[in-house]
Amino acid sequence: MTRTPSTSRRAKKVATRRGFTFLEAILGLALLGILGGAIFAVLGYAWRIEIEARQTLAAAEIANRVLISYIDDPTSPEKLPETIAYEQVDYRWSIDVAPTIIRDAFPGARTSRDGLPATQEALESMELVTVTAWLDDGTSLSAAPGRTPTVRLERVINPFQYRGNDTLERLLQSPERQRQLLMQMSGIEGGGS
Image 1 (cartoon, rainbow, N blue to C red):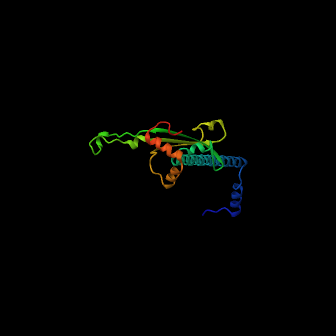
Image 2 (cartoon, one colour; image 1 turned 90 degrees about the vertical axis):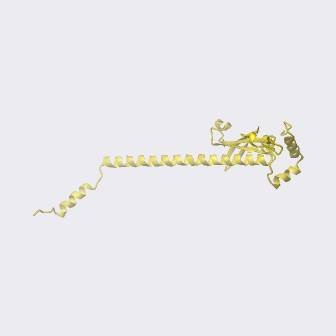
Image 3 (cartoon, rainbow, N blue to C red; image 1 turned 90 degrees about the horizontal axis):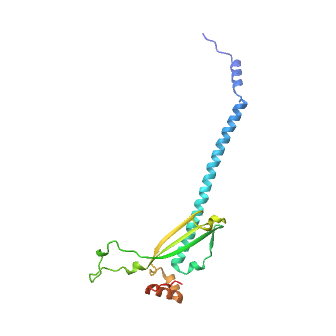
């Protein structure tokens, strides 16, 4: 028959094992510091990504507004400021308009009523409008797009397309817009200025 140790001896053994040594405490604190530093680094990175995503989205909103303004009135970008504020941050923008022609990949496949190849005059008066918007953070890097959050929108526009009653009313009220439209329709160069 085996004897079990008394409870007082067992209690003494357990009591001596409950404490930490100084080295164990230092190692535990070091591991806790490393873990905390890693967590804060990940949170900081996620925060920076969130801010950059919001700035890119704001640049997209500015570019979209400038593009819609141009579609509604081709002279409106001239009236816009060089920088546009959005959520207490300034954004720069630029617009480039270039004539473009859409060519038929199979011109012989489509013919007019008289049997001759159909011309696509409407597709020969298109414009490629490119609007670029970027964050102006006040540094020299933000003088040109690409170094700060940047968005570039491109759209092919038919200048003769009906855009709604409000655009038509503004056209009828503005002799300058009527002149520009007539110059574009007649194919006279330099009708935009």
